[in-house]
Image (tube, rainbow, N blue to C red):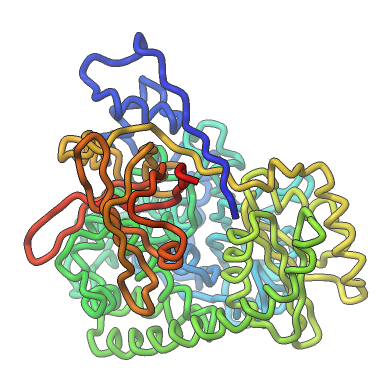
Length: 584
């Protein structure tokens, strides 16, 4: 699909700080970083740039209720979501409460049988098990009915969540809510992941461990070896899980999230958790710096594979086990599940693509498909890939066990959960974010009517919205690709949502060499020249372009600048993202 290229405009020179590289200034401006926030963005500091958890209106109330449960040895259940964000949020809360000596357990839904969010039958089960305090993570804000039901059994609920807030009348009557956009007017950062919200509760508990009123609880404050815990150190060890959840849930890497990821990557590299250490070792990353890409493509998929193919508790056990042998066993299972997940994803992708292509040909603004027994566990992955392929919102549903569950992924111009609000009469329940959502349909719904209603709800979407846009940060020349530029780009890390890796435009280069590389000639290796300077270019998944691109052609390149390390030597690497043949 042809992309529209947009080069972001230059920032007026008079606004430039004297001590800042012009390219850094441009990149920061492109990302909406205010001049006064530049130092915080480039040099995040843990103590300076994390916020007081007690700025949440309900935090003191939440902490006091947990302390009461600790003193009375009440049964606390963490009701965790099953994806990487939820698993890591559960890990943060479980580690903290366990260190405080709590009588704590974790409950997770089965992704396919139960779906997302609290379930009435689960509430009954927890009551029967003797739970008196439920702490949700990465869920709960849309569970007014379920939380009221828990209250009828005498159970209190503390919500930790970050998902879209329902209308005021539908906000649950929970004992306390820790959500960056609910009862958090004083809290300065609004874009935490579920793991981030859970961490703020853990942080609050950690911060009051020196308070005299907790003295009778602190007796139990021991680590796994029975040694007294240094709480300031304990807090930072939790950041590996917070980092995983923040990157895995694709929240913006701005503000407090940058702190969590910067320091969390350092904790991940130390690989203190046996389960993560085994995965990193097998992938060849143990003892090496951990990047957001390693989290996104190595760690997060294996954690998510547990719930996609079996149950999220497998991943939770991997995150929390102190046993090397159990870690090896669980890592083996998750590797097997991840391989299985890949095969199932490819099969459903093929089936769904065939079903949706006629709607693409009809220029539908939203693509809606359904299948029998499509695995709900991978449906979000399939929807995401089709959304990227066709550059329009994709909604996929599956009929299984007498129910119809669905998931959606969307483009920037269409807030999918707001779209769901406009057709909410079709749903038993639904929720999500701007870019992703999920639902359980009512039994009597006609799916064709649902598809039509969604198409009508997106009638204001224009063809311009559906044309993929490639936003380029700056035009540079081949001569500017130096180690000095690399130092600039390193200052901008970590990259991720809200801070994408910079894309550069290089115009009118001449192709001097071209050859295919890799299995099945999938990739391309170029040598290009501009102004007498030659550089190598790697073009991943551009193998077929060798049939239409020739030596001597003039092209414009949209590319990323990276660093390739091989056998102890380092070299700068240009990675092609898109190109235009200006010779034609």
